[in-house]
Amino acid sequence: MSLITILLIFVGLNIDTFIALLFLLRNYNYRLPIIGFGVATLILWIFGVILGKGLAFLFPDWITGFMGIILIFIALFEQDDEKKTTNTSFLSLLLFCLSLGGDNLAVYIPLVVNLSWSQIIYVGIIFEICSVLLILLGKQFVLIKPVAYLLEKYGNFGSKIVYVLAGLYIIWNSHLINHLIRIFN
Image (cartoon, rainbow, N blue to C red; front, side):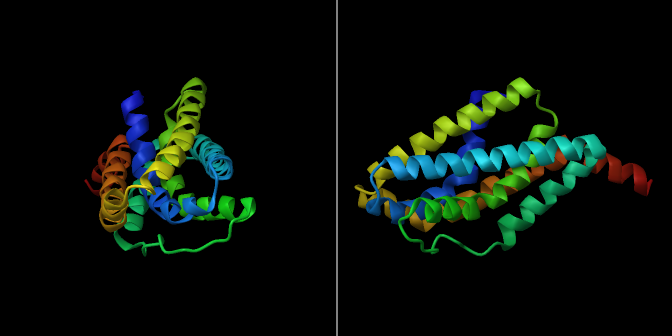
């Protein structure tokens, strides 16, 4: 998996969290959001790896294609959750990031099925680096009103496009369509 692909996955999955954090970053110095978002990203990635590898062990590859369908449904029918509020404690920030990132599992689970352990570690490291960079970038965006406004206004739409495209990729990569065609022929 290329670095560009990993970066696109991370950005696409976390744009909603980024937008939500824009509203909160004014209340924090850099350290707490970096640690909170980094820990949330790590927890979600590890959980996705465990579920994805477990699913691959127990079920055939085409089953993961249904996760792509779930991801598309999340994109199309999920309510906007950028307006959630939280207080400024570490635990609150961690739970806030976990709640916004829960839908990332719909991508992580089928994504890890065909990755080697070294690739899983590589992706996890890139995700953690991106978590730090996202917070640093967010702190700068809070200072630029027009950029923050555009992200707030169109970020959810951009996220939904990424979710649908990722869902279609997962469906295609899992060979679900071929399997369903064989069943109905």
